[in-house]
Amino acid sequence: MTMAADRRSHPARWVALAVAAVVALFFAVLATREPAASRQASSPLLGHPAPEISGQSVLDSRAVRLSDSKGRFVLVNFVASWCVACAEEHDDLIKFSQRHRAAGDAEVLGVVFDDRDADVRGFFEKRGGDWPVVSDPEGKVALDYGVRGPPESFLIDADGYVISKIIGRVSADGLDRLVQRAKAGEARRGEGER
Image 1 (cartoon, rainbow, N blue to C red):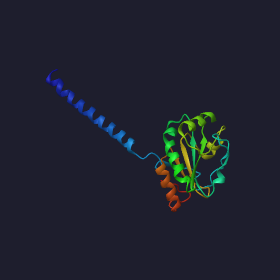
Image 2 (cartoon, rainbow, N blue to C red):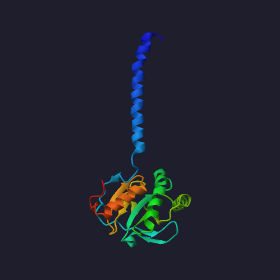
Image 3 (tube, helix red, strand yellow):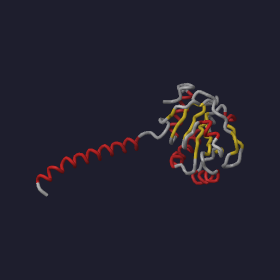
Image 4 (tube, rainbow, N blue to C red):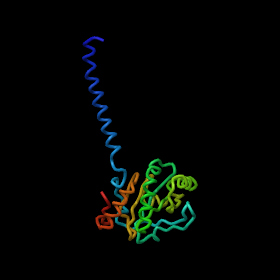
């Protein structure tokens, strides 16, 4: 290699190093950002009564009606066994459910999104979780809520009004913050969380 060729390769090395630094920074930001309750979305349902959800739980055949949960916060969570992010958030849903079970102030209600009931049963048998999960074979509940794909979640307040829509993976701590803010009156109907 001649000295002239060596001098010409230095700018290429600097460009490659700069690109590598930008890519590393991008991945660092993605890896450290909070996973969920901060990714809230607007929805025409915010500030309005939650559409009714009713049916039998695919896990144990018990009858389920969202309106029977008045007086408690309900996280309506759309789930599918094939959804990677659903599997990733599942432990946080278990934590959230367990934290609020003793107080009786919040609970989780799952809705099957574009999946077979048997596959969702297997998903819960493998990962745990004992909240009701309602089948939605025609997609009516998903349509009523405007869901495009799982996981999507809606926090319903104790009076039955939708106060938050969360797209993507949830975290137990983020959900707890949403519930605490709503209890403190910070989440006003119709505004949701930003």
